[in-house]
Image 1: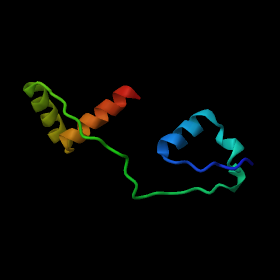
Image 2: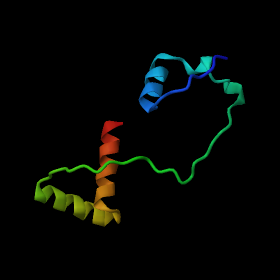
Image 3: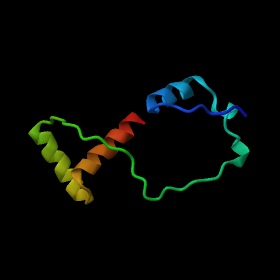
Image 4: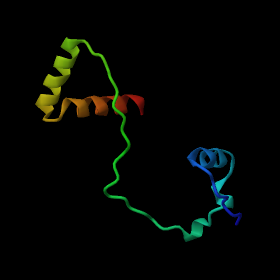
Length: 82
């Protein structure tokens, strides 16, 4: 196995792994399953302008489904892009 170099920062590490195969540096036979039950995906707040009538319709739909309207929007967006 090759030795993983020390990196000055995340950007340097990112650039390294973009051009190197981790199988040359990590013995996959020694890996263990890790579980992170409290880990939440990183989110970023954005501003999205919607017509008022569209937002009202989304809120009605979300209310009927008993879910927050923002969660419903995220679900719909996720379904559309995957």
